[in-house]
Image (cartoon, rainbow, N blue to C red; front, side):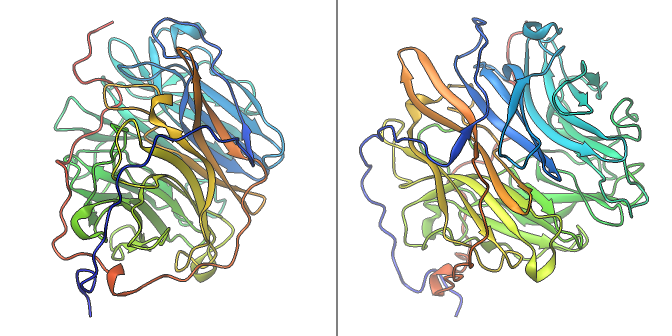
Length: 482
């Protein structure tokens, strides 16, 4: 019988002592913050995005986090041998610290366009106004100065994706998504490129002129584009589609309501979606949600799927631990092996967590972990801790909280999963030690763990968030003009 935990109770233990540094094993450091500008908190790297194609993996991330938004530049790290070795550097021509015009840059997302043999990194360039730009490279090692995508000012939260399937009628089309927080609570915009990111169409809105934040475009084999996104007030995830290669966009349909727990310790998190597709076109969306926890005391990561981007499954709980645990899970990053599908689809989920949700900024113990599924998300392997525990005092501060990133990253290369995350170690005086790391050899798939579907695993009826939904900006909404 469905119920509120079958009468079971959950006890949250008292806060634990502050974490102590642990040696990193099984991770490769990808980059270091070498900037010295006074506006940044050094040495910090946060919020990786990543994409892969064959043996190549490209990650991009903020370097030198600035309190009121963005970093001194976007760093990149490239592997051409499925993560065995990496080469890193910084994108030219965006910020004043790399011969550009903007004062900061944020929100990097990566895509590969095989039709034009070009890698693309989209980012939010921050100045007196903010614009979406894209940096291009044919080898993912040498990058051109950025192309401006958005004529819309005060843009926010960009994402980018390219149609990589040769069977698609829109093969080689690339799509950028962002929102404008100055209009209608975050009016959603989309733009399309047919020439490898050199030029972009005039941006267009959804048919219902929807507002939202944090959209991630994913593309089905027939070229249909589906964009899951958090709605304007943070109460639901919705999705919209294009069947004509981005010329026009549907109105939004609901994926699910959001019920989330306020993560402790002033850590910057939000229930933004993470999305991917398998070889058959099934769309998978995951986010942090407390609906399965009695009293909304902590978050799980939940998963919903769709074959058409319109009708969605009910969210299921990814069983990272028993419901009776005190853990809190957040900032998920989902990937699907693009060569797999259906009941044998391979999924990987990288995420952050606290061992106990009941902690303070002094005592919270932050870790990051990865889990995999080899049956389309029906069962999952036992999670593998990548790094932690980390003290929140090791993280740079922002106007919206302490930061590892609004996103993490997961990719597949060579049939194995890679987690790419920001990891902090103990500060050295006033200097931080936070950098981007990747799993050194990928994570192989193991036998999935049992679903743990006891009476207490079902959603709690009428569960409600324990904090007011909010729109999550990347630049301080009332920041002074530089």
